[in-house]
Length: 474
Image 1 (spheres, helix red, strand yellow):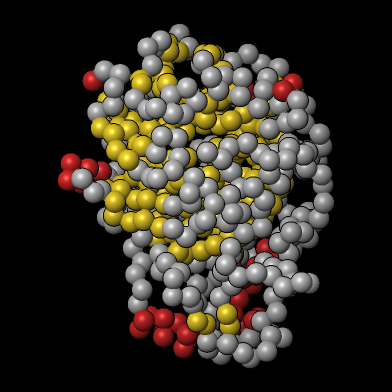
Image 2 (cartoon, one colour):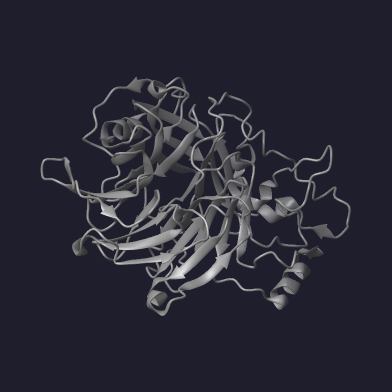
């Protein structure tokens, strides 16, 4: 299990993107065969440093809200169900990991004017840079100075609600985004109404609001004390207000909303794991069914109508199962990540046959800290690891020598990819320290946000196509 931030230090303002900035040297590079540099395999020589290639991203921004955040969530908004045009605006909620319990807070914030640039996955040849940009060059001029810190850069507006203790995990209710549940390291799970803060952010102009945010004192709507602290929590996507929370003492509790705006928590927990419950996921199709994963290496499937024991349980990994994600577009698919760095994909329809694993990857060598299926492509998922890599995978990809030859011909590059590199590995993002959690934006195809000890990144890789949700076929 890999959980807390290693070194809790408050972030200080500095030049945006200083860890990632690097000038593209394609026009000055010697014409020699390119080598694929593998994180965790290849070593940097003395005096060498990695530089970010801006052309790999349609958009890339970094920001922080003070103390590091172990967990956050992207809030559903009313700005459009499928947004593909820059600039973008995103609403967040996050919980801090401060040095002292009384210094913690829940941050509610809006990042607006997120600029970017649409690029071709395969560069066009036979034109110079100005011609390559074509008609986009005028409309996307703001993306060229997105890291210069000028007036055209993203704007952060922040409000804070006082929170006693560090926030281990925070999630918003899908049906009512202003309602959020937060796990505290004190053992409390609290439900908050953040509507007043979101309304204030929506009504506030973006100019001149980046000063020190005031901390508001507010009482939660509901509060429940577990016997131990925990990290696992999830809202039902089908039954509004239904919630489950799991703790480090192996217990899972069911919350049901009442007509008075509070919650009833069943005092009899679901018990089936022999060690800490690390993550919980509701079924995207069955309102009474959820899954749990644990330090005991198992994944359990539960039906709240069938008592307090799991309906099914199976060995998922040879080490702690830290995180999992139930595919919303292909509901038979469940992805999990382990403390040993492995990622497994299971087809739940095959559970009765014994071996339900349809894909297994051992690319990461350090614990998996977050995993999430794309809300727009049924075969795609994103993963973060303690090796400081955020990887994006597409299970529909297979090695195709003809396509590789065609790509090399189009780019006029001699790139010899390592044979042991999985063909399903679509993208690697680096530059953050102690990565903890990531989320796709459900309304902005291709956008991923991640949190780490040194702050947040918003990224849109250029090889992730902005498409409408697929039909769910893998």
